Length: 100
Image 1 (cartoon, rainbow, N blue to C red):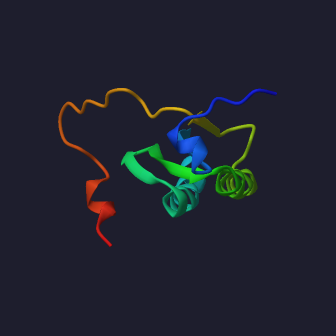
Image 2: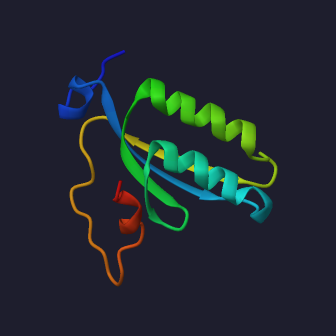
């Protein structure tokens, strides 16, 4: 298997965008899990740079807390480049969560 070599991959990390549509009774738990690993940018959208091992931990936690017959989680991974442009129209959500 040939792997693409980019800046993030050389450092053992990948860029991730995660989006979800979760039943209301589980959404708070899933939100809390995603916040541990990624930065929230919209109500159900997260992004960040994590290692493959950390991504696997995130997926294991999510699988334990979702109902695969009702809920949906989509994870996009980018091992070479982050998106080429990010444009925000309106308010930028999730900014307040970046304060430590």
